[in-house]
Length: 329
Image (cartoon, rainbow, N blue to C red; front, top):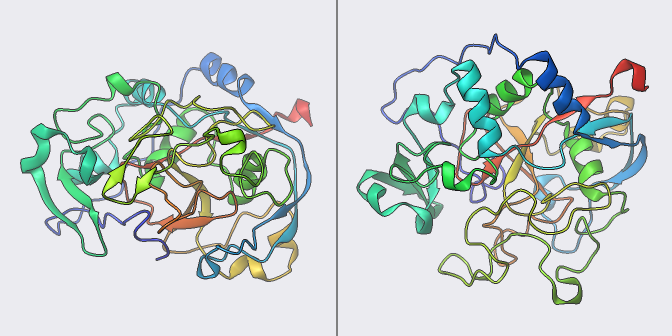
């Protein structure tokens, strides 16, 4: 799997027990709330855009290229990643339990583990020892037992798997964006730019995203204002009105992961592409607060990586998309 250092796979129950997949969420948010949620979304115009990248510091093995003309129908997307407050409302209404809660653990960045949870660290990722498996870490306790989502209510929800994100989206009357939709929206109408705001990381010396500052993984100076996640409306939005599509948290997309599927110039890869029909991992986009040019500069808008659908970490979240109402076409 690509980018294991960026997003390690959980691999399910730590004791090797087989845990069934979560039941489908049968409830939906009240119709009034779902309609209000759709009205609050941003409308992304249809049209053709240049997808992918050929940056000098790109990761060819990730399948970032080739740059190709992709045509999309208009769609709706959230301005921000889903927050802890929003996810809590979903859990209260549906009784849903996330994969991390069912498995009993999730990955937390070593410097963020709550002091009261240090004895609950079981092991670390061999290739990325800054990732620690912490018993009891989940969306409600993002740094492990002793921490709480409440003080981070307007931060993006984390420790949510692709399955969890899909369940929330279905409850809200939405869906996860395709990878093409995500990139189209993240670019904000800019063609072939490195970032959602242009090609310069620090325009006029200003921080525009939440990524690692300093020497990874030992020193984070916090020059951009944050050591972990930032509130979802931090920094200026792009030209379409989306916040934090570079850095902060990786965002799940609906597509199965492939590094070659999109390289073939076929209608299904160029017109409203939805990715390959099957796979073992799902696409995540946007980078996170742990990205740094020295080892993972995947906060560039064309960058991509993946993780398994049941995996969760302290730096993966999501935002939702939706089709336009029929009357809006």
